[in-house]
Image (cartoon, rainbow, N blue to C red):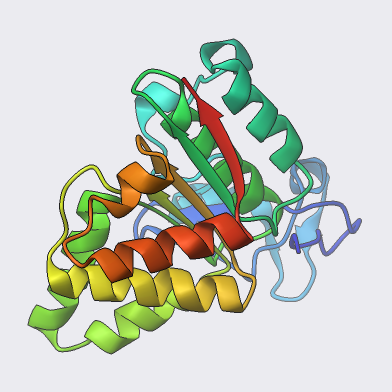
Length: 229
């Protein structure tokens, strides 16, 4: 659940360190108390420390693409608007958004991801395109920490995978993708997936037919599915 302000117990706003490019989990303060209160444990004046260390409040995840920052509901297809509306307040749900290019799947996914990230999971959320997911897995093999990376993707509280099926995957990547989706669904961890394909079309994108069918089956069983034409 969301971090709470140590002064008034309102929802705290995530604090981002621009030097380290990491969040400061021990700084739990809302915007109102930031203006009028001092941190009583260390202690310090919030404004002074923020300016000195180049900390900043973030209402959107720092990796949000600039083109999607100003997304409004009317940019989305009716199906994506419905998905976004039903997702708000239900951040434990897993959601599949599918449809042709231009229906607003990725925009809607970023809106969902940011809503959940801001309210619930500022230190335990990851948004990856399939290209970046594949790069992360491959880098893990090169660096000798593949298992650690796979565990993080399985265990992070909310994971978004954008453009599933856009490119054909290597057999190794198909195996890892199945492990991620299988273990996340088994443990009811929220996952958001976008794809251009429906069930049959998506399973056909896999080299191993059984793996493709198994992934689609888990999506059908555990995800809320929204399609847009």
